[in-house]
Length: 169
Image (tube, rainbow, N blue to C red; front, side):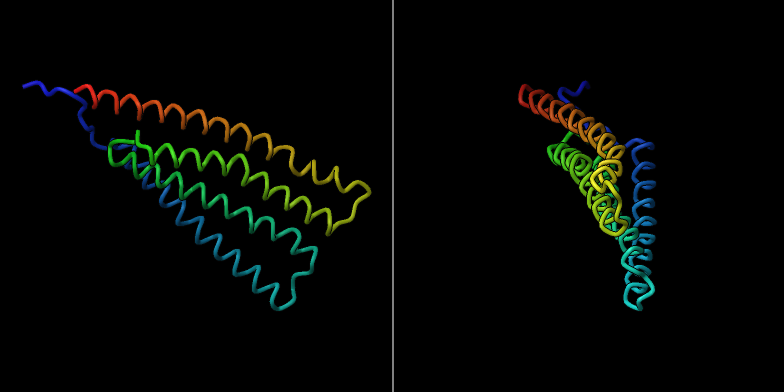
């Protein structure tokens, strides 16, 4: 007997594998980030880090926040793929949030790092130092963020198509 309408497809081995790999990456990155944070806080507390050392390490510490956020978002998206249907409004929302992190989060942290570096290491042209520290990150964040926004719209279109098909059956 032929079934009319969309049928749910189970998770592929690739989707399950992706979920496992991203979950492990998130766990390892979280542990390393926590160790790094504890070491920095401990060294600052006992006075072995000067303000210049802090100016170099604090941006790296802050840079871990959007990195962990992206890993968590990819893990959540992989989990929804593992369920067999990635074309959901929640999936679209996750991709849009990741796009904003790439567009705003990474360049903001890089800008903060450039400003701290310029304050800690006075240079004849501190603005040029900050702009130089932003150049590669801003461009890659812009390209990645825009690509993710396009991908989110493709997924949103998939959600609308699925709803149309379900409505006609």
